[in-house]
Length: 211
Image (cartoon, rainbow, N blue to C red):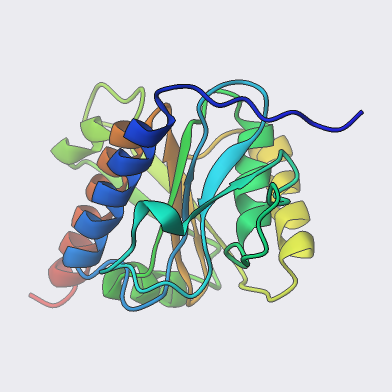
């Protein structure tokens, strides 16, 4: 049976909120040029909205979001979605509470993804701002961010990351080597908060290494 998309009157408001968030991330220098990708979903049917490929994030508009089915295939839209749409599919499949996925290409997350690639993770520990991450109530905690090798074979990459989730559970986010950060949340605002916490700490860690 053909999948039937569900739309509500709140869709445009969510699209506007995501576009505002994209402009914010671009203004911070975390989404240069046409890099990065983003998505949100409204309900539990599995369909979601994802950013179109090749759009400068400084001028990203509501019309640059593409409605796709649970497999990432667009509904009657000839435009190309982000090359990494399958990673969004994976995250929504693995974590039913997720309602928004954000991806950034900042200087600091790129540097750390390369510097800690052999170790396979980056640890964040003892910072007060960690309480901005979901379900964390104290600074006295270690948050481990896994780092995966980047690949142009997104299906294979999604499978690899999915196996990691099965073994280790849900992380707060993950890094792709030389590529950037993925994080998500129960809505757009909480996803943005996750991104701000991570990018703040990536910069702090870098500067601590150089004082």
